[in-house]
Image (cartoon, rainbow, N blue to C red; front, side, top):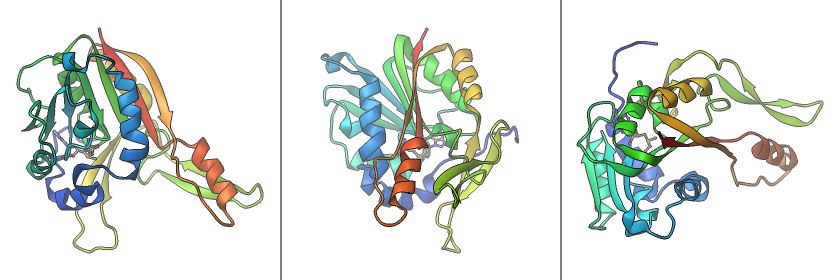
Length: 255
Ligand SMILES: C[S@@+](CC[C@H](N)C(=O)[O-])C[C@H]1O[C@@H](n2cnc3c(N)ncnc32)[C@H](O)[C@@H]1O
């Protein structure tokens, strides 16, 4: 993989991302799987006014408005249009949004909780982001990361297949252990469509990056889709949907 630090901002796809995330309220999986899972792992408890939270690569602020309103929140993203959308939809005086590159030094402050939601895989140097998260996380503080599952959702290297004999829909994985840089066409039908970059690392790499940044993994969860198919292929599709997870969540504690 190339070593330079690419511009991985989603500024150029911000209108599209604002649309698919309902102007910061979140897409289907944010609402049904990701945000409920993140809130459970954050385990903010009965004293939300003692919590100060940093959301790295916050996009248009999907998490912020789901947190207990007493929590002090700072969202950081490199895309100004997404940060503007986040500010538009969030009037909580305890919330602030900053445009910044999270691979570079960040404004100083210490946080009890840090999140990186569906974003580490869009950044060329995830290790640097985790070092930053660690630097600004209090000792004993919690980091929650959500990834598109790195073992089953590798752009261009994983796909569904159907075993007609066994009536099974299976997941095929062609390449996993190598780190990869993969451009993604956000709207394949459209000739003017924009690309974003995805970066694949195997789970063991994330584990090492967390260790090197001074975090201890507390728990790993794998989240499946809650959708249900109907019709002739329903049984096969529902089986594979409940067996092959969409997301991997890691909760780690700052040592
Ligand atoms: C898939 S979006 C996820 C946004 C949000 N967490 C969510 O769940 O809706 C990935 C985000 O990472 C941001 N990003 C990419 N590289 C970044 C960097 N170096 N610094 C800060 N943000 C970055 C993009 O601008 C984009 O908003």
